[in-house]
Length: 60
Image 1: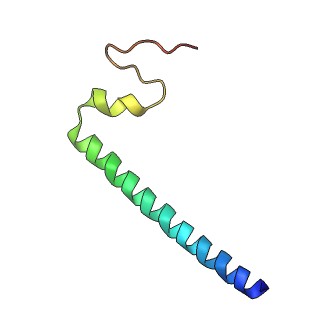
Image 2: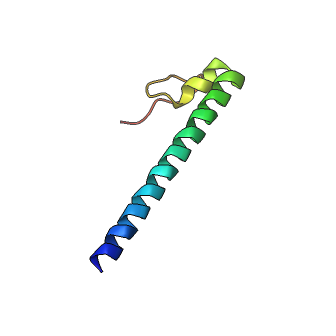
């Protein structure tokens, strides 16, 4: 029983690591696509503290 649990944990960790790597690659691709095609005002809107034209100040 213990060896079976260890086996399941091993494969769960392996698939989690693969999913993490795939998500990282997808996020990098998305960022590159946005930076090449979007104007600077649109690219900066997701950065903390960035000021967007016409945006309302955040309520603290």
